[in-house]
Length: 329
Image (cartoon, rainbow, N blue to C red; front, side, top):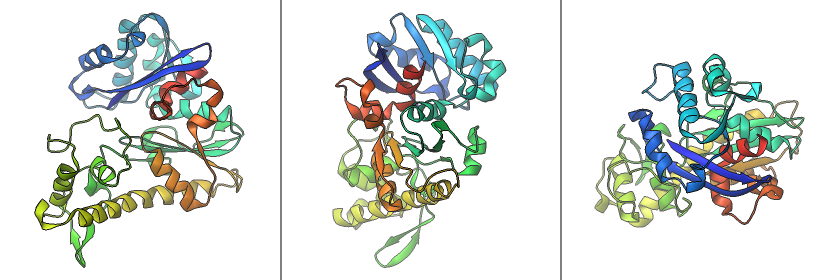
């Protein structure tokens, strides 16, 4: 997982950063990650916190995860700390466990709430390293049919697919290779970071996790990992063939996102000209989705442009929930 942080001063985003975190090893992993963030993240401030990761297997359940994460924030972040509880607003850390159902993975709600301040009707599409959130915005408010991760998986508002960490067998069971439909090896040999790297689409710095085989991230090494998914060695294909296979997997990733978005856009409370507002490390996938759907595409950073300085727009987009919770606090 990742920790995202944003610095907002006088209503303007001054900086935004993301760092990897091995949270599955336990809460102390957050201390390690915090130490790698810029000094401003450790300075005294008015901290607004939204979270995901409460379902990580180091916690007993979601309520336990929310309580421990909120307690860590209260203990380690200097200054005042408020926890974002989505539909329940901001709450004190010691109230978090009792509102765990509202706080758990409410980061999507923060981004949608901010977008709603600028756009009356839209479909927010935030594609990250691991998951994709598709959130209808109606009458300037988040209008998701589901709220929890489980509910949003049922409604199509959460698609468990991202541009870095998703294992390729999660996208398909077969793939085309030299005129045949070959079954895939159901192993974590390659991830979506490999296919998007081969296609030249992965933003610089987006892949902060180790590769599936703990080796490097060159084109040749990504091709090798992709080859193993279809039981092949690197030398059994050309660069053009590996790139074509990567493009096929990219399309396989896009199809369920297209189906989910089309279903949500068919809602009677969303106008036919509602745009897609796109953000995240996988904003480039969301842009393709908008084109396929024939919808206008608005970048998250353009929507909130009045609140930005000259910071790198890609990082502001990638850190959308952190930026959002800071701006709406």
